[in-house]
Image (cartoon, rainbow, N blue to C red; front, top):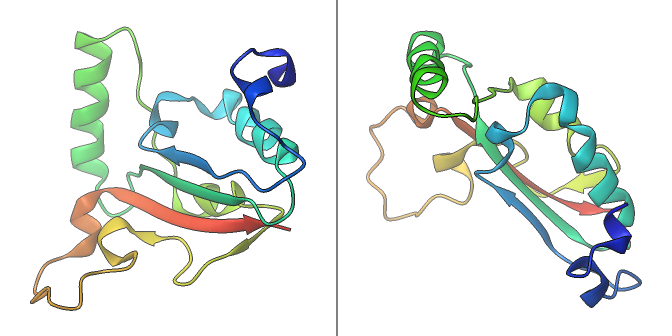
Length: 131
């Protein structure tokens, strides 16, 4: 159980605690995604949850190459999630604007001249607050 872990016991889960799952969930396969639910359930209302993860949405060919590379050169397969799957990781949370979007669109720099294609990031990002 997560609460029995020595590191986790250092936190006071009766108060808001931020959970940052940034650039890690693509190492968690779809069958193991319940770990996100278990962590989220431990969080007090008002706790921020931040997630970013790889996607094959609009980038299927590039995602296939990345998947092959990981399969051939590492012992850790990579998992891609579509927009709906990433959005579902925020169940029980109120999403923070702009919601689940391409990573470059999450709080973009207003000085950025633009002219690029945000989907080329190949990554969805979002933030929510546990209700």
